[in-house]
Length: 125
Image 1: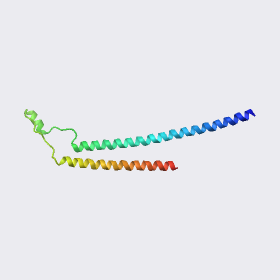
Image 2: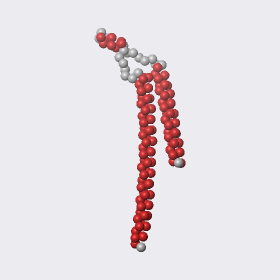
Image 3: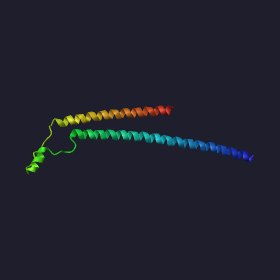
């Protein structure tokens, strides 16, 4: 009789152990999925920010380049003539940047909505 009790308790402990093992595996899988989701969001956000920064630098002209007037004046030791941008170009640049940022925000919002709907459909399965 003690052998029956021991074998029964052993089977119960094995079942409990399998239950814990299954629960831990599910938590690990969920952590992996969450990490993967966050990684994708960070990657896309970084790409959008890098693209916006690059576009901004292209529009604003990036580094200040020396003009021919400045180079020639150094050759002849004369003062440089300051070259100014048109006052109309700055608002146009700002509008272009705002337009591109709004497109990036819409794309990011669509990505989040798609990712969330995929996760909901996986959870229902």
